Amino acid sequence: MSKKNKKNQNEEAKVAQEEIQDQEALNTEQQANENEQTAPDDPEKKIADLEAQVEHEKKEYLFLMADFENFRKRTLKEKADLIKNGAESAMRDLLPVVDDLERAIDAINKGGDLDSLKEGVDLIYNKFVKYLESQHVKAIDSTGKDFDTDVHEAVTMFPAPDPSMKGKVIDTTIKGYMINDKVLRHAKVVVGS
Image (cartoon, rainbow, N blue to C red; front, side, top):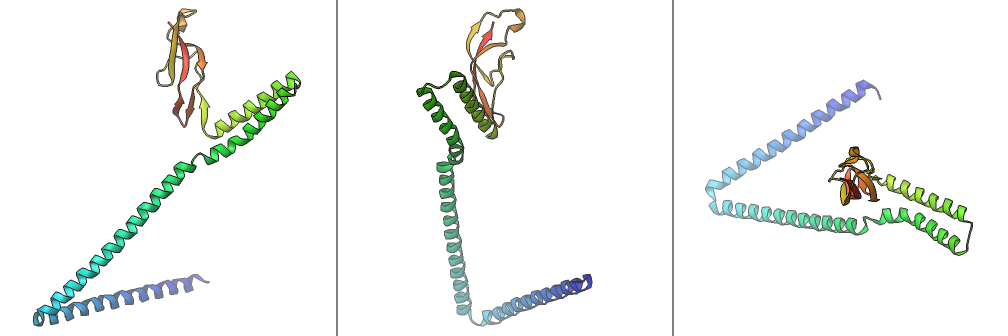
């Protein structure tokens, strides 16, 4: 289709839209004139018209309220479903790790080669760490860092082996984790004093 034809169609559409708007304005004006003409002559008709209009507005209001109530209930149900099934994806992705652990336990029970068992457990650990990273969970690097109450929890104070380690983390007893820059679990650490 050429640009000229598109332009002509757009102009025709604008003209048609203007005609429709003009017709609607004319209909509204005629309706107002009819109401004005009948109003002074017949107050009872005006009252009846106003009562009908109020009744119409009430019905529209009730429909609107019913729609809103349905929307509210549907939204609450969707939120409840999300909360109930929110962990479904995470749990589904953990199942292969559980399968690998079960295979490792079977291999241990059968008395397999110790080196191959160690290698298998390392593979499972690496698979699990990759999964955590895909979920934006990362370990907090603590040992040798300054003690920070935002990410660390001091388990005990221990005399620092040298003065430069005062106020720093000497050892991490339990690793801490963050998810999306928010502390998921504080690292439990030993602090030099």
